[in-house]
Figure 1: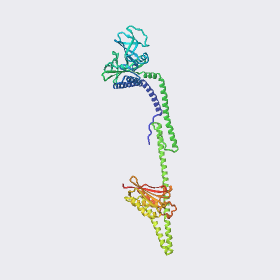
Figure 2: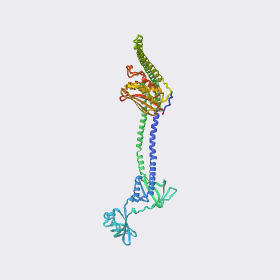
Figure 3: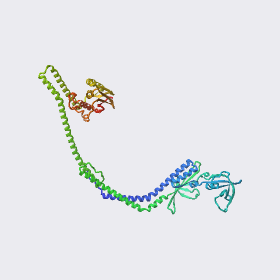
Figure 4: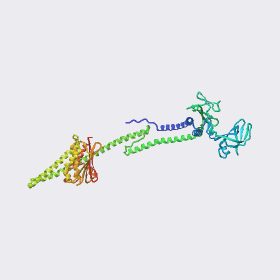
Length: 586
């Protein structure tokens, strides 16, 4: 008998689970909001930008981008990282300004450079780009002792209308264009100012801030600094990386990213604490409801199990398993159900076996009655004939009929002797007595049987067609000889006149299959099932003219069962086919 486990209170379990669930939810909200999100987001964004800066630097150095490709890659970087990027101080917006520099000759001894945007250039020259050595009217400002002009009027296009100031003068007249080129096409990205690192944390100023010392962090060869933006509660991260180019110069890559998005999220979350508390209450109610359902559902299931047991259905079992009172009740019901089911099953099995034994006894009694009836029928007829003919001889029949009467008596005695011998053979085979097996050629036994049946074959004008594969087999030779003889003689007996009996051999997996087909009437389902029984004859009248004792196929069955052979009979088109197999020696 199983021991009942110590139980835990259902109410206590419900309270603990509900309380822990609510507290866990509130704790997670506070931890995530206060500690995890901000730090995780900042760290993740900084790591991603550092990774992408390194990838950008590697590609920039290896692929030696053109000016246009560099601009495209800078724009791509800024879009993917929500950050700004400069290479040696040159940004994407700088690279998008299409400005031209014109080298002008005033007279044989004076040369000036003039910067002008593409839009102004096209407007000044009627929508066409000027060509080398083109002359045009120009009015411009020039800083004294400078070679740089500020255009005011080109041809008829007025760009600015300003007065000259101190240190400025006017230049007016026709000039000759010696050279024109895109400013950006002529820019060679210079090496950045050296960045000196002290103790791995100090980056001494670069560009125009040489006197500025900042405390930088370093990760994966990239320096970064998180700056607090005063008054707006926004953090900005500055990144610096230098690349040693193949020409021995250094290139400075600078990036700036804002951490404003996470700050906005945190600000919004802090304004909506009440939402999280309401959410915690709602989730707690759901958890409590689910837990209460988890208690009530097992009770309903246990009720159904008890109802089925009340209806004598003890096969049903409770699937609920726990260490509380419901688990104990479920286990007790299952034990009770199992014990009652076993007792009921034993009673049913005993009744079933009793019914089987009774049916078996009835079948055996039926077989005995049929056997007595059949053997009585088979012996009664020849005994009656013998008695009648013996009385005729005793009464002094004519001398010329005495010999005939004696021949009939001897013939009937021979039939009785054959019947008795067949019965003895069948009893021996059914007893499972197997003689010593040997190797022999099965085709010789088939030819022998055909030769012995030559007279009935000739009388019915039957042809024998032997085809297929035959080989040496392993078995009790005289028993297999009797099987072949019985099956072929059976085929001759029921074969239609002037037809062909086909004997086919087939070798499959070291087994020789023998098929014996004869044309004739098909067998009914009952005949197919009963044809192997003792004294079973298709001719239910037991007409003696049909011949046979009704034991031939029963003997075949007993022999083939002893050889563990596969055998049977099937209806074929226009006839019947018997088959069996026997093990080969190969």
